[in-house]
Length: 179
Image (cartoon, rainbow, N blue to C red; front, side, top):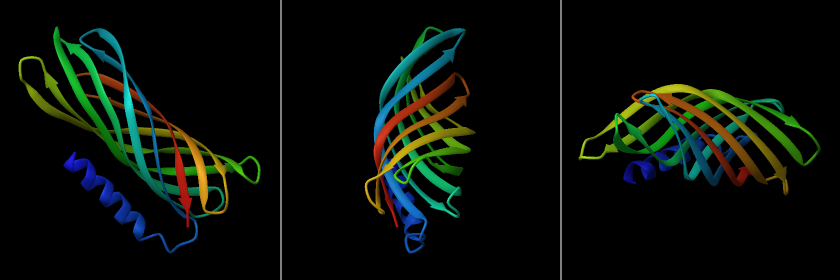
């Protein structure tokens, strides 16, 4: 939890350097993570609550960048007949493309990289951490309540592979504040 709070403060600190610039935004959402896990020749599905903080900058009406931190919850599965529970989190950066559908409704496509981490515990007391860097894809649908405040719905996809291959989809609802 302490590392999570440090990451959240760091993300908000980074966003502070772009706050004065028009086109900058910060946001957050909470939602639901699904985990598709393949380990030891078996497939497992698990889900948990997830949340995300993000900050970004739109260079033009179309192109921008975004950084994020996401807690994707826990996933449970088996490896070689041992029960495993992993706490999943990731952070990363993406290029964004925003398409205005109306004056108030928009879609943002995101593609970038995510550094993921899975802190795991195996039945019998063995524990450790798997880490990696993989492709991040996202889609945001937003509705502008006014010039500063948007309501957003997100879908994010991150895949990680070490001892187990875990594909995570996070579905979230939240807000975005535009500067």
